[in-house]
Length: 207
Image 1 (cartoon, rainbow, N blue to C red):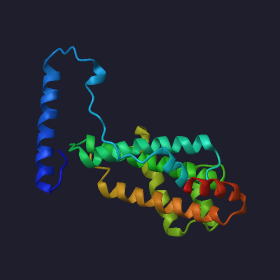
Image 2: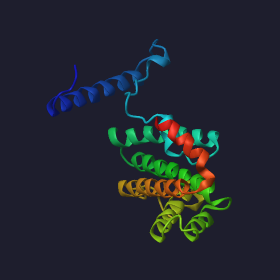
Image 3: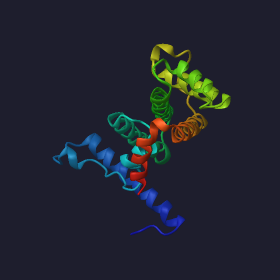
């Protein structure tokens, strides 16, 4: 039955938690004849943003394949976001979820910079975007923080244990950087005649 108040919500969560524990306990101790494809929970609909929404947001990327690949990774980001918001995890799993969400955001920002600022390493692209007036000094510093956080995907660059390195506030910071950077690039391309054909594409998606 549909949930209509907080009391019903709490009760539904209690039942789900107990049922999931019972399912896992059974599977841990029994040999089942149930096909593996039937042993999966259905992911709730309406949470993940569709790929078309992401493609429309990054309308200024000329390469359709690249724009699509970004959207696929952002759908995976939404999956991690759901896990982060809905699953009670303990260390180190909770930190690793946040880490990989930040890594996805950093990778997206890097490829966005490549599309507007040209070729080069991320750190050089950030400087170039600042010199062109596309971003300001504050966003330049924030992007550099994100670049360094994203570089921690390389295990050999770790200078301390990751157990408590990634916090919810770090994730929120990364999300805000992506939003600000996307808006800055979109505003720049909006006024650039070189993007007039892509603006037409964007307008088509909006209708």
